[in-house]
Length: 125
Image (cartoon, rainbow, N blue to C red):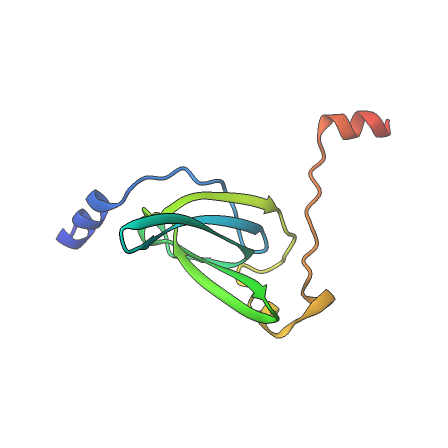
């Protein structure tokens, strides 16, 4: 193991985030420091990609704000990420869905994955 890998492994903070992938809608609660104050800002959008592995992994989230597309790249093991909530599971066929950048309105929608539970299967039977 190289010295760089050893230092990265020692400095990374282990976090327990939920499992998510490209196409999922997530809310990232991110700590922002302004002077001596600290607040939590929420960034809700669609995950375009996950990149990297282990302690150097990142993910890209895209949202539309006032008609303008905004993308933000977050390191998964960042100490500034307080919480990641998965709002919706999306159905996509690709690991990187950059084609969303060229779509607007209804064309930019992602179909939601429907989770079948025991209650719904009993109700239909």
